[in-house]
Image (cartoon, rainbow, N blue to C red):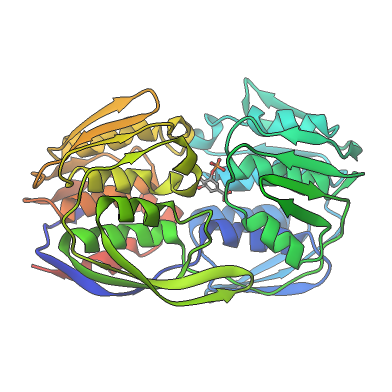
Length: 417
Ligand code: S3P
């Protein structure tokens, strides 16, 4: 995929549905009594992996346009579950399946098979799950077991780990308390509460009792993690309005980073849709300043860090990002692949054990981008090339389909040369 440099980037965008919320809407409705329609669903490969796993477990899941119709089942059947590239599918299903008294074997592609799964299996065992990993990774084997509520303190700030324990707790006798030190995204808690689960949130504690779920239609807001690429290019090259974007406070770390970087942005048309805050986000071309970001903010912007780091490469001064070691266990080692991306375009980024040091430049030369199969590196690369002097090419650019089908078409349609 060749990306030409663009002088100006302006336009209005309707951002595809949120990946985290689509996964949950399909998965939870597939485990509920009744039928539901998920509208504005993201039909990226990851969410389709969730859909096919839920079919294998016995639910009816049908794609209709950009909606997904789900007819749930309270009784899963034992199954082999192929999760593709999707960490959310595998980790949330480890919890959900453990609480349902069936056997399952979960596998994934090469990238997913290298990612840590003991972080989920270990807390599930505290509830009594019979679950095995291989050297800490997939394949994951689950054998039917009775679960009992317990207190679980999560060891990593991960919404996937928290969600897995909450989902297992729905099928456990007695109460479970999940405690995390830093609050992570809370889409699971919001959606389960709306579907009738016995769940209560008190700060960073979540209390869950044994529950049955009732199907619920979900209108999925646009994904702020997908909007991030257009917003970033808007800050460098023009004016951008991203419409209908989820602005759940556990996801808006990028807006806090924008404020600190001097990016001119505003939220318009703020409202609540299906229990999730939603707004239109406008960004205007800005003079960027270097920033420091540390551990507490990481869960709220973890998926946006590659593109935020790229913006830092255009900011005045030296930016420091720390406490971001979770990046090493994403679809690629994003500390390494983000630094390689920025340096490959002519920037100056030093990877560290837990983040980056980025010395900003007025412009980047351009060049080639190797995403290593990682959708967020490919899309960040496209933004870097568009904002560079000469542009360049992305190898294996199609991995963007994991979370954002039609990304390049939407992007390039708004270039002015
Ligand atoms: C997700 C949580 C985050 C995020 C991932 C989606 C979710 O992962 O990086 O893209 O839907 O719960 P962790 O919870 O492992 O940090």
